[in-house]
Length: 133
Image: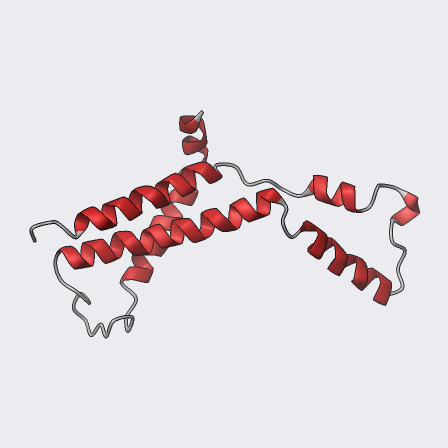
């Protein structure tokens, strides 16, 4: 099951790794003036840590979205704008309102895979500190 989710997440994983690498090499982050900001195993560790944080942030964002923690807040804000604009709440009386909205929310697949990658990159970050470079 995990391998099936991994196959569907190749583009997301590649994009998150690229974003993490770009964030680790961002000029000015640590006074970078053309050379690598830090040398040796510390740079490798920082790189893995930055990638892990990108994966963790994306994974937690997707997990919160899948759990529907802010569905009622989002629905309430949309309903409030309907009231302010003086529109009907439900067109032609169809639907159950909030329940239909909550069921129609898109679920992001592969959240456990993303969080597993975050844990792996975090472990690599710790291990990279002990590299003899």
